[in-house]
Length: 374
Ligand code: PEP
Ligand code: MN
Image 1 (tube, rainbow, N blue to C red):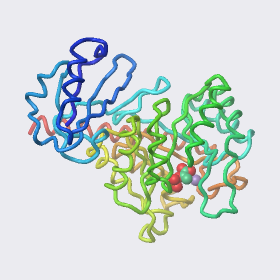
Image 2: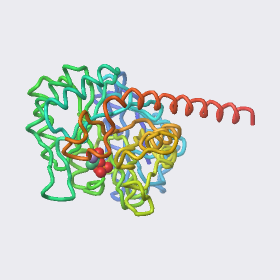
Image 3: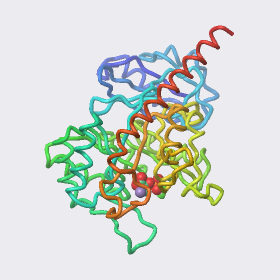
Image 4: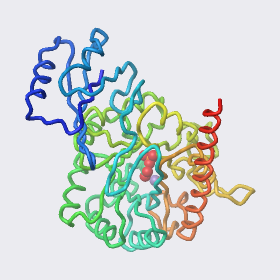
């Protein structure tokens, strides 16, 4: 059960103290956890009651001081899930941008930072295309221990400096160890916070629960959480909930394809048909990663790259974010060069996304019209 308190509740007021006294005095098998979220306009406080809450009467809980609404949660994903009569937000704001189930952002960029020059060329191209977001990997989880592991904290100062110079407001960057969160935070602080970071959890760490608890424990940076490539959707959504249960609900869920030979000839079996499913099960915006799903630059007989085809498929199904590998000189890329799009393809990619987005909005309007006539 979730008690949603009046917004901007006064924590020094007598009725708030009364509510806390009531919660502290509840049955020992029902625990409570406060979740406070500072939005741009309002501060929202939710109280999660954990345990056998079926014995509680929702009507009488609603009469408790400071309580505005009561949501009964019987399903999984308490914080991130979408429950019956649930009007909690399906978006959050970061760096002046809205990330929601109704918005769309493109994060084109380098799979891995290799050198300053490539970072600068990439960011300049994004700025010219009016793009405020990018992806830049500093810490790379590699299958082979002898492969390039990323420049780590050494590259952070120039990545953040160049992001600031080119007006990039958000950089999606994977972390594979809890120390990386501190390294990113320190580098941003040292450079005067010229940009923001969304911390990425890669598919190899989807169920690294200790990492999730640590990343979820901080609320300064939102999280881009990748679906596990060999587990069920339910298992991945439960893993995402670890972030929220530790305190951070600013989570974007990313579909990146599933590992199975059934997906051949693609690197992974593209799972973008799950975009609307994840939006229906949870309040998270949904991202698609066409680069790691397809894993190559195959071109269909229609002249369209498979990467662009699956991107359009995800967008037309309502995706809210696209993570895509680009590289100014793919032959020289240290990671995933063969799947990277070229810079001269950026404009084409963005225009193709726009076509699919407009088609999605038209489909949504059609569905609305049909249901109002029914
Ligand atoms: C990546 O986005 O660079 C990456 C390694 O992705 P994934 O975790 O989905 O393999
Ligand atoms: Mn990659």
